[in-house]
Amino acid sequence: MAVETWRIGEITITKVVDVVNMVPPGLLIMEATAENLAPLAHWLKPHFLDDDGNAPLSIHTFVVSTPETTVLVDTCIGNDKPRMIPDWNMRQGRFLEDLASMGVEREAVDTVLCTHLHVDHVGWNTMIVDDRWVPTFPRADYLFGRAEWAFWEDEVDPFGKEAKGDSILPIFEAGMAVLVESDHRVAPGIQLIPTPGHTPGHVSVVIESAGERAVITGDMMHHPVQMARPDWKDIADVDSAQAELTRLAFLQRFCDDHTLVLGTHFATPTGGRIVRDGDAYRLAV
Ligand SMILES: [Zn+2]
Image (cartoon, rainbow, N blue to C red; front, side, top):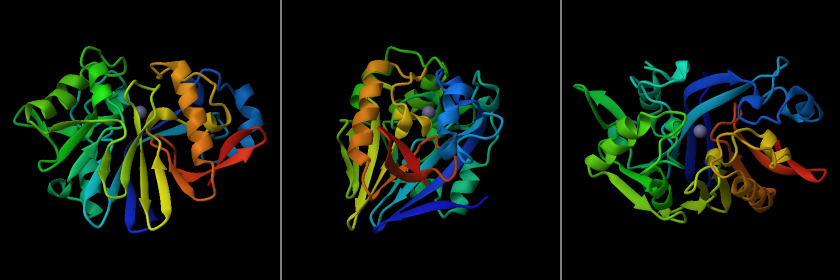
């Protein structure tokens, strides 16, 4: 598979895929029916909608490499973990081998950043060694949003109830969790911005270097159709009203001629620009 990589000034961003599931967009966004998608098909096809009405839901990590540091944004599903979704259950994927083939050894990662703490964003935080869950990236600080952890500390992820125990708590027990504010500056050129609604402490990641800019969405959008219809409810959003406000503000802020938008679940080609489309927006790739 071709490696997808983007250059923002002196910073390189590389996508490493863990799992791709083919799903109808209506699985998560109930109003995204075939009938409602038809007027948008001219730009959703072929990348974000196929002729059978399905779309690839890509679960990937972005490796952000600056001259100073290496940061992983979100850690996907992971291997060997019991999960209720069959494709995610007890996986034996090649994520770590793929990461290494791109020149990123586990020991070279300085920071792991979770945009939020859902099951498909924390999986490779840990790996199993001698029947114990240990941090996969032994030198890394693992950044979790303070507001995000405050919510999940007493909650169970409806999409993966075991994830807290096998992918989050072991990081705290190892003393490697760092709770950060939603506007935390991760490193020169890497800045969190609060994008709450999908989850209470959800963040997106702005990357800037030499006058160029990218933003990693996290799950404030699952699919580019939410640029055209930010009002459609996403069943995975904890607070639908707040999520809609956040999507609108994000679209207005990053609808410009130079911000590269990288979707955390967007299918290949994954990155594009937000452009106006009538009184709404679309992703131009
Ligand atoms: Zn997700």
